[in-house]
Length: 145
Image (cartoon, rainbow, N blue to C red; front, side, top):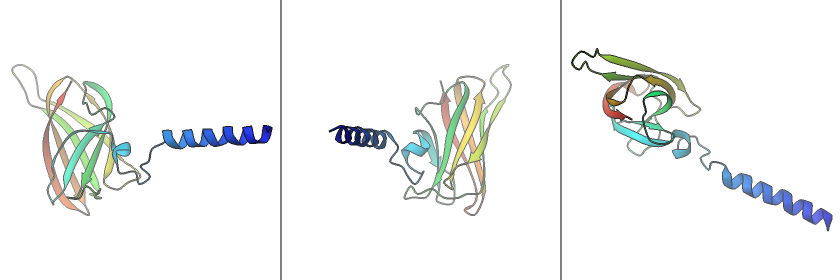
């Protein structure tokens, strides 16, 4: 009886742990990239998608994900990538450029980035890449809250 109870308890814990874990074993789905903030064309038949854990870009320090994908949504290795948030000068306010520090992830074509946006408002996410997929650039308008 005691042995059956222990086995049942261990089995229940294993099932619970499996249910709580990510089903994204390839590292390329929603669990890997979070919720989409915005996407746009990036040249060479690729789409660049900017995302975060909650799908919101905010003022201040944060982590974002940048994914390059083909027309089917499959991540594509683009080699060296960069992400800069640009806000043009307005009135007496100077131009702002807040570059993200990108690092590669376990999946080619998906990059993790950290950025510190100076203020809320309308920004241009300036994306560029150079590598196996060719050279490309994209400017995606985004709003930081």
